[in-house]
Image (cartoon, rainbow, N blue to C red; front, side, top):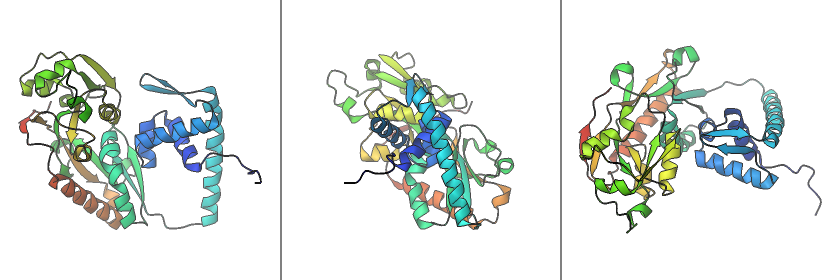
Length: 320
C-alpha cells in the first residue's frame, strides 16, 4: 500500500483544538462550534492519542497549552486561516444569510445546541452562529440579531418569554441505588457530596441555601463539596456520579427523561428569572430571524409538554 503524502489528523479534530486553544476553554469552544463540551473533550483526547503527546495541562478550573500544544496551535491557526481564505476566494461573492445568537453558556450547551440540528435541517440556507457568553451584550451595537436572556421581565424590555425555570436536586441513578448511603429524604444529603457552581453572582438562588430553606433543612452540612466554574461541567460531574447537583428544568429535562439524571425529592424552588428572546432593531424584517424565533417557541412548547420526572412541591424565591 502506498504511503500517504500527508499524515494529518482529521480536520474536525484540528478545528476543535484550535477553538479550545484560542479560548482556553472546552465549553467556549463547544458553543462556538455548536457541539457539546464532551464532544470537544473527546476530539482533543483523540487528537492527543493520535499525536502521542499532551496538548493541554488540565489544571484546577483552568486549561494551559503545553509547549507542543503552543507549536501546534500556531501551525493549525495558520493552516485553517489560509484554507478559509482560499475557499472564500474560490466561492466568490455571495449573499450571506448569517444569524448570530448570543445566549448564556449553560443555555447554549444544555438546551440549544442539542436541538439546533433540527433548525438547520429545516433551514439549510441559514448560517447560525453561536455567541455564548454569560455577560450581557448590547445586540444592536454588536451587530447581533438575537439574544436569549436569563433575567427578570424588567431587565428584558420587549423580550418574548420562552420559559421559566425550576430548581431541585438531581443525581446519577447509581447514587440512589447505594444502600450504604440512601438518598430518600432531604436529610440524607448529609452523606453525599454536593456540587456547586462558582459563578452565581447574578443568580443567588442557584446556590443550595434557598433549596435547604424550602426543604426545612437550613443547617445541613454535606459530606463534601465540589466546585465548578461552569454549570455544564457540574452537570457532567453529576451524570458521572460524583455528587448531587441543583438541577434546572427545562434545561435538564432531556437528561431526566432519558434517565441520565434522576430527581430523588419532590420539592422544587421556582426561579424568579425566566428566559426571554430579544431581537435587535436591525433584524425587524428578517425572515430568517422570524423563523428562528418561531422554532425556539415550538421547541420550548414541546419541552414543556413533557412531564417532569415526578410531581413536585413548588416554592418561589424572591428576586434579589
